[in-house]
Length: 259
Image 1 (cartoon, rainbow, N blue to C red):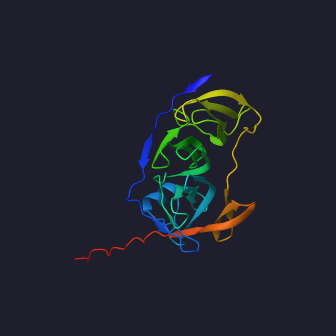
Image 2 (image 1 turned 120 degrees about the horizontal axis):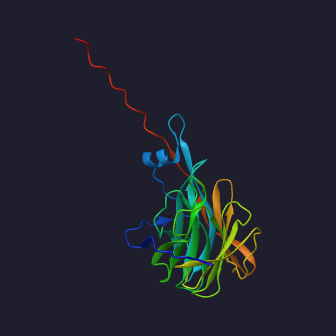
Image 3 (image 1 turned 30 degrees about the vertical axis):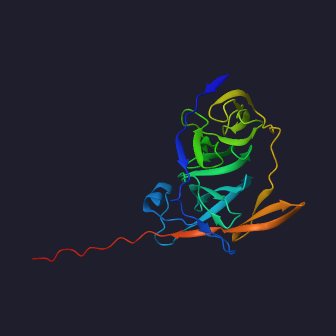
């Protein structure tokens, strides 16, 4: 058994300075600013033709009166940033309770009670690696980013489940090899993890809770739907295409006049 000592890399507290995006009924475009540095990092040209930026929403859940949505921003061939949305007023406004992480995506959410929740994520650029968790223990006011591994390593969290506020399991795909699947265990609420076993077959962890929320993709938007009385009802929608990145053409300088 190998112990993985995990340290909190970043703690983020939702403050009044975080802007709110108001949902009016039409698909909500989440703001995205095109930066040359990001385009350079992702290998995007965006000069002759603009590079469209899309969102991909992956999971939704409720924590107390809050609604949580995870996903990412991406270009056609690159994951640009993670995306995390939260509404505390029944979907009227949405905020980002954690900073965007370059090259990363956020996936599944598990809420234990009104105070504790976990979200798994990973870096997708240039390969799937460095899986991590976002953890809150104060109802979503503060989120801590906790890496699963001590050092950079390939791998992604296939599934995780907590059966108490302290104990949880995570199934990790290391991307190849005869024993590519590893099971990790935590007794500290996800703040540190220990590898328990390896396997060549992917097994499903038991006890994954069902969510009363789901994300349904359409051609131009993502639909957030809520399950009530065995019926899925539309709740909110988010625009798929959120920006068109284009570089500014380089200015030509005239040669100095000849004497």
